[in-house]
Image (cartoon, rainbow, N blue to C red; front, top):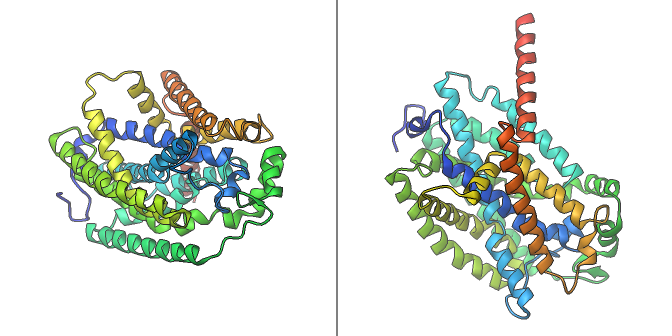
Length: 409
């Protein structure tokens, strides 16, 4: 990879002014892939709180057909698509940096406003919709990554090494602590208190908002504990973009083939081993082996896209969803909350039992199809998704006010 004196790669210059199709398709897949994990949170007794109580560990790989199907479904998704989305976010950040350099704009410059707006969006999403929001963590990580983008390639490599090293050490320590702890499920339903189960099954929307605010520290621990992983994956996305991994040329295809072989060849056995070892190994599986599988997934998506000669409805839908990823991410969580929780249809309690896990998988398929169709129809009339458009208008207004105050002073 050829770099300039300040560490910025010259390869992205070839893609100036045009989109990389693979990025949009992969981002669309990542959005509906994250729903493959989150849909179980919405439909589990105790909802969001069940994650902290061990109530959402995957289904079994032996027993009924439903248990096997749930176990496979969760294993395919858990942590992989979130890691994929994080890598793609880092690649998108690198594109914005390169665009600022070409236009000779200061960096991070107005990107600080973009990150702050994303943090605000994530805060609203966390409080009003979904406790396991990723946007707040992305915003904080993006600010550090933006600073590192203006540093040397060596500095970014060192940051990647430290980030992944500290992260894996922390996950190993937490896994050892979980294995040593004695479980105590007395008076609970799958590890969740009856009061919390009733809150999500019968409580009002305002009650859930109050519950999130009261337990904000516990519910916001994921981005804190996994900050090292987020930083590593952001910087990995930067490296992949600058190496040409998203390009349509032979070099890009070779990189993606290596990603496919190494990511799935190493990641899948490690994930299966963590799943077979039991729930105590959940952290190493989701935050250790899953990111490796995500790299393989990206290579696999690239291999499939390379073979598409004429985009069909599915490809166009995924591309549209990728271009409206922020809106799609929030909308899918809103829809699942309305379907599953007591202030909506309350299906999480009504269909629990014989209908599980099939109705949960059906909910994922139905919401995913709706997102693909809705995003395609929306982009026929508008240039960006609803939240993306709101973000642009807010940033434009903030920039105008900043410029105006600067002139008046």
